[in-house]
Length: 90
Image 1 (spheres, one colour):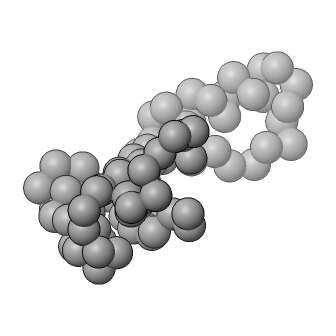
Image 2: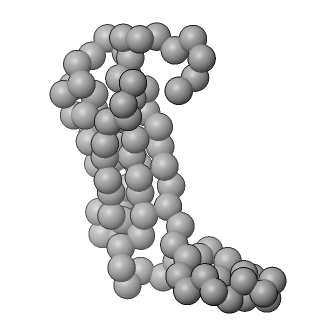
């Protein structure tokens, strides 16, 4: 949490990752690079984006609903992405 953050804010973490079976080219490239660096003991790499949304002057329930709207309208494609939305403890 940022120092000086308003205690009346609600933070929601949105994690967006590719669904199983969808090609993750960035992860595949990292896997190969780790092997070249001698770190072949990493059997799997996956990438994800984490969005830390901070809402003010809303309830926790409203913040969750607004985060869901952000996911549906902007942050993820339901065809290829798996999404986890969770509140961030204060």
